[in-house]
Amino acid sequence: FSSLPSSRTPSHLKSTVGTSNNNALENSTSFCDEADTDARPSLTKPPPSPPSSGNKSFFAKMWDKYSLKEQHKRSILGEKLFRSAQYRANDLTWYREARIPYEFRTRHAILTMHIWFLHKRLLADRVDPHAALLVQEELFDILWNDSQSRIRAEGVNELTVNKHLKDVQQLTFKHCTHYDHAFHEYGDNPKRRFEELALAVWMHVLNRDEESYDDQLKRLAAYVEYQYANIVMGVPDSYFWEGRIPWGNIPDFSGMKDNDGNDLEEVDYSVLSSEELPKPWMKMLTFAGEAYYWNTETDETTWKRPL
Image: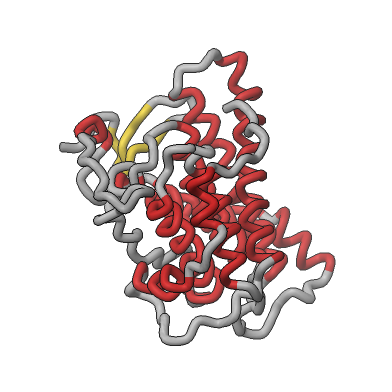
């Protein structure tokens, strides 16, 4: 939970962030077979949207924010969006095939990445910008509550939970603003943007690991590149406002090479088998950090681990 050390790029990463990655960018569209990838819009322009309801009166905005009906709708949508991001972030592919360490900070970083995609879609919304901002607040409130549960599940002293939460929030904001910087500063420069995304992944997802692989970084950066376009510009408004997020496929991490071009050694990931659950079950945590299990299709919950 400690704050990030000063930025330092390892020597092998310089080859990743200092060269063109056009092939990775071109191939990144294969990560999703559910979105139209024939023509990707410019990353600097918002997608076309239905007529805006953003010119709301003061009283309409107050109704959105304080009426029980709108609060209930906002709570349900925020929960759906968060659970969608959480389900994607919990996929063990990230920690097996992608070789990301299965630790609190890296798992939170993968969740943060997917929350950021949703956050950017809400900021770009033209259907109901005011309601979208309120949903965004709800989404981050749910993230902080979930973070507290995960911190408690780590067994930390209850008196230090709020301190750890502040550390997590600081890391989350740094992570998100680094992605913002990459797309805002280099929106019209695909090569430079890709380099910055690779650096962001190395710093915030891989925790500045000097032993990380260029191949791994490129695939993760290409995923961020693709998924940004998919969520912000590809998902239909009707899907998004119902909380239905077609994330598409996780990248194929097979055949990765080390920084000398050699095949990576096989790694025993049997330790993660205890985390694997039959679909459509998800592991959840109470506010106290106790585990229970939720069936995302039937809405059934149980304390007993599904077989």
